[in-house]
Figure 1 (tube, rainbow, N blue to C red):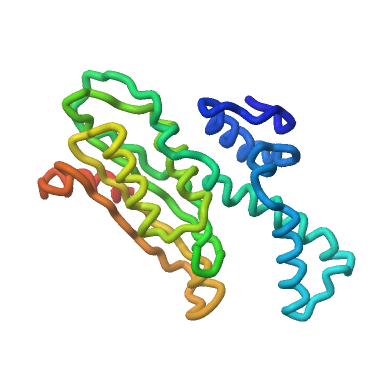
Figure 2 (figure 1 turned 180 degrees about the horizontal axis):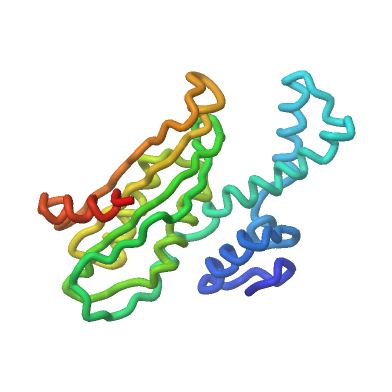
Length: 222
């Protein structure tokens, strides 16, 4: 595990570093933080506080701009990581049926209001003729990298499916996201608890209705 004060990792270590940093919450001096214009964010947050009628110099807010800047460096860390690196290493396996990982925690920020949406991602694929598979944790990490950037759920779902299709060359891919959006719960219509479900299906799972139904049944089974 990398220490937050370490020098910038090479490409092979970037994703491991990012995952370790997100778990430990270590940001100071990190490559992810160094790649962000923190001072510019701080100035912008200070102006927002003034614009809404707050005093950015009062005790409770004086450090808020700096905190928000560091938080954004973390929340948008995926902008500085190449998602394709997640699937850089694949393995041969004698398996030709569905591989499915359910209930991957996903958190992102809606690009329309910069408010969070959170839920679960479910990813399945059928290995292709080359028999290549990827580590199960890589699927979760792929979700993490794409989610750590301004997003819409529909695009996030498709990006995961498309990269899996490109890198693994599987016979079929299915990705389903179930998320609650704070831009719907905290503002506007203010309906909490509503879930948005999106799916992206590729290859044989798109073409074969029976295979698609089987995959969806496994995903939605509680």
